[in-house]
Length: 192
Ligand code: ZN
Image 1 (cartoon, rainbow, N blue to C red):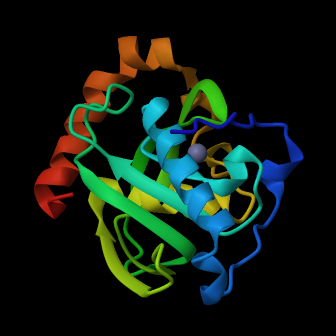
Image 2 (cartoon, rainbow, N blue to C red):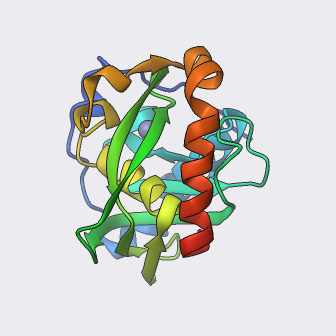
């Protein structure tokens, strides 16, 4: 198990557009190790996802996983471990929801961000095979957040209301209950 150091906002690699990988590159030892490290690092930090740029590698690889009872995001429904190489998210609706997001590379802060409630994800998996997913509801926000990382975008760039910026402690104290209600309604509607 290898837990890598994570970069924080202000580091230039987080602002890079990551390089897409050739399908035959994916099977290589370097990429396979990077994927394993991303999974270990995400799990060690209780993240819901992690992108290669966050550990200093500007290649188009990210992982998403929400295990039940995640302490950072107790309201998020489970998402099985998903490895995405060269992911492209395409909205399938104009409808959005106000997601209260955090990020391991933006320590201590959260903010409301608009995310599409329904999208398609095209990518390669860790074996270089095509992956075609539909992502819905609250989980759709998680996939959009990770894919943004691979284009040098952080959630703080996608502003809905700048005054929604808050610390994790203030979120827990003042906003989490109301947000959990909204999140539950979304999960009831979409099943994810
Ligand atoms: Zn992030």
